[in-house]
Length: 475
Image (tube, rainbow, N blue to C red; front, side, top):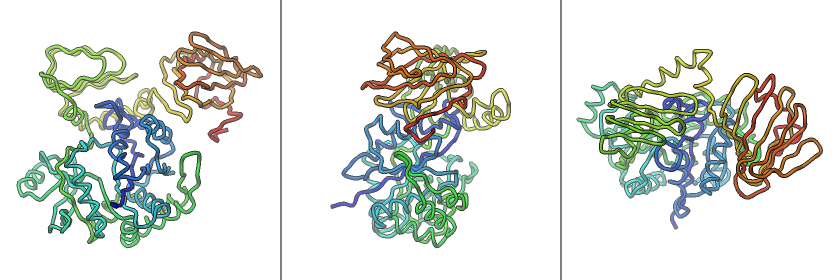
């Protein structure tokens, strides 16, 4: 019987390179760019074969825990665990903590595949051939990374130079190369034997922990203690903050892969992208006869080789070439595709402005353990939201000091508590919540409940919530 692999999915990143869809509070791994799944969901799907994989372990943070849970639930995928990092400490600490956790649960001989949640990969025969080679190489005592055959002299990736061939079909790692300038990248491609560093790893738990103890003992000790002192919270595992904070903020490449003598690389030819720019999204998409990739509400005329995406307003684009036009609920980005690697500079400028900083941090849609809400309209002393409540879930019993609320049911059936009264609110019916009144919204049905909430009052901030009873431990 072939030993199964435990996937460890890194899902805590807060990048904004794909702004305005990607924000600090809603990063790219949880956004749907191409296809009908988010990048995180596509990652879950790739490791869902029960003949090859154990249930996955996800490493994320407090802000994204309910996004992780909801997107896994939508696919019907059960997670082995969701580890919550108390603060960002780069990939070395995350991998060490996950390895220690899996070793405790499944044994030190467990095989781990560490993979990012925000990469686009075509899981074809070439991909699973690479997985097979990596597993055999990991069982032979190596720390395996996946090297992607470069299709161009890209300067946005690190590279791996391969060394001697190993019996499994992998190669020893000769050296890691930081992101090169264009001339160096061209020389490496001409020389051969260089691969893009994919950031995907495979190793036995005891082996990676041993190398971590040798080359990064501070990381190993902090991760071990954070797991030993971890506490369960609903369906999540909270790593101990005091212990985790003592880990150096370094990558797994720097911590061990560049130092160990046991590093191996599996050359791989499967389709891979880190989806790090709008140009990369355009390359991944299905292009029409004019070379355009169009998603959502858009009409194009005399436009070529462009990426146009909108889930809200209808975009009409005329007479342009090689551009990205991206519309979110509250912002629009327009720029040349060839310049899209530099969106980060624009985001920094927006983040520095008092009037625009929120556009880089918060997303109009926020997720909660019971479902979530989308901000529809904001004005002076009023706010309109769309609430969505999962079947069988309920919000906390709460009250507000500064606002009243009007709820209109547009889909499903709501159970509403107002003071001492509990009433059923059906589609096209409404209910009023006076300022200061204790209230609660619940979905007793089997389909998603959708409500329109109109808030009115002198202060409408999310911190004006006094929770009296809460099944998620927030009261």
